Amino acid sequence: MKQHYTRVTAFAPATVANVASGFDVLGFALESPGDEVTARLVEGDGVRIVSIASDEGLPELNLPTNPLENTASGAVLALMRSLSGNESEQLLGKYGIELEIRKRMPAGSGMGSSAASAAAAVLAVNALVGNPKTPEELVEYGMKGEAIASGSEHADNVAPAIMGGIVLIRGYNPLDVVRIPAPQNLYCTILRPHCEVSTKEARGILPKEIPMKTAITQWGNLAGLIAGLMKQDMGLISRSLTDVVAEPHRAALIPGFHAMKEVALQAGALGCSISGSGPSVFALSSSKAGAERVGTAMQEALVKECVGGTLYVSQVAEGGPRIVSAE
Image 1: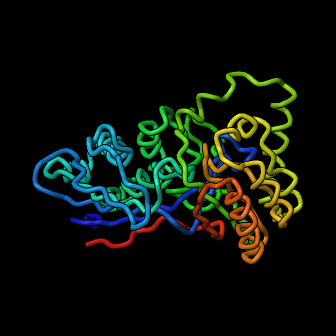
Image 2: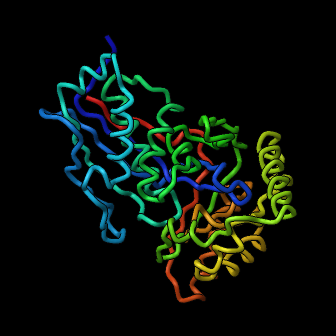
């Protein structure tokens, strides 16, 4: 019989989605920050959220505790519905699940906050019942949670949050996810302006159709970015970090975006674009010192817009998600 636990805590990291030219099909994990979810077997049935807390200094939370409206519990419910005819289903037939959610980054940040909660929740529950699902399979259930927050099922945040590293979403029907090796010296700078952008709003302003010339440019940039990552060719990565589909429309939602991008490139960044749907802005660099230098320049540019911001510098993480404790 597989090992079962009564209480598991899992961590899932922040992520950068789209990565400039990879709209809805590319994302990568950071080392930190991230969310933690504790799942516990209890008497009864169903899924209950017993607490949602956040780290000191983060904005006040206003997240739903209704299991049908929260990304973490929504993902867990999808996972539970998939279990049939095995020990895990029998176990969950006798017990319910309580979830404790610890937010370590703000919602609406463009850093995959909803995906991190969904990812940590399914990782914890999967471990709780003996790990019947592979990480790739868990991505599908995480997407169900993501749909609650954004209105659509997309995996460019939740896949790297569950699998770690850089992940290409080759297709959705059926889901086909591919891990892309990250160059060892690839670092990410993220600056989160102290404002919020709704994912649904950011998706709503995008055009329904784009010209063929624009599509060809974006395809070439995405192919170049994947090739650059595979070959560890920083020059090719730099030339390919250009988004001609989403960034031109979403930039107006972010205070000082163009100024931050300009100074990031002047400071030596390989490229700079919007993290997910914003408002966070990310830049990639070929060293930690370079990433820190870029961050300082971006922060100074944001201050000139009279907007505060929180800065993160992290290596693009091959790992990321993990089981924190199990008992």
